[in-house]
Image (tube, rainbow, N blue to C red; front, side, top):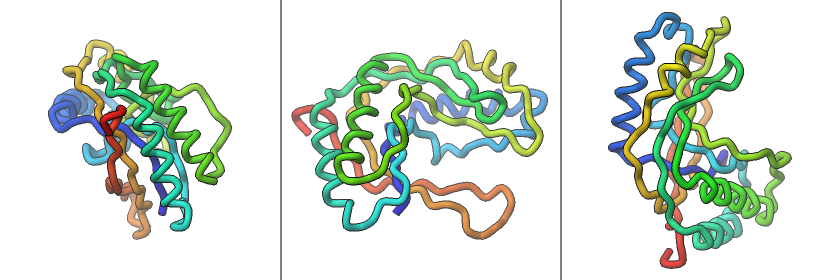
Amino acid sequence: MRLFVAVLPPAATVDELAREVGRLRRLPGADGLRWTERAGWHFTLAFLGDVPEEVLPELRERLTRAARRTEPFQLALHGGGRFGDRALWAGAEGELDVMRRLAERAEAAARRAGLPMDDHRRYTPHLTLARSRAAAVDLRPYVEELDGFTSRPWTVGDVALVQSRLPRSGVPGERPRYEEVERRPLGAAG
């Protein structure tokens, strides 16, 4: 099972972001981007890759502990950025230090459960909005448009374990599907 750990924004925030993305999609060159779908909007904390069934019980237990050690925190979508001309993303503001600790704890939980994790990099909270197709698109105008965007804040109260199902049909443009497997509440009360 191909899994990752994520923070999922609430429906109201997704609606706000959808309106902003609608504006972005009207900018010149937007048809040269592959836009992610609302159902796929999330903040990945730790990508786990293919997780063998026998590792799942230990992983679940360790993720529960990591979630309990992290108190709920405030977050809002804010601005955006890009990874070169490959990916456009929405950023975040709020208690990002807590979110970074949660990402580190999720990664450590996976490693302790026996999953090989890539070398640790400083966590950059981002929610991918679009990826460039074969031809590069200058993403700077999109990032400039996102500068003024800030969603209403919300309290992150849980962390989700999400399954990623890769396309298998071979149909061009088909995207991965994401299915929430379970959530773990944050804080000692969880």
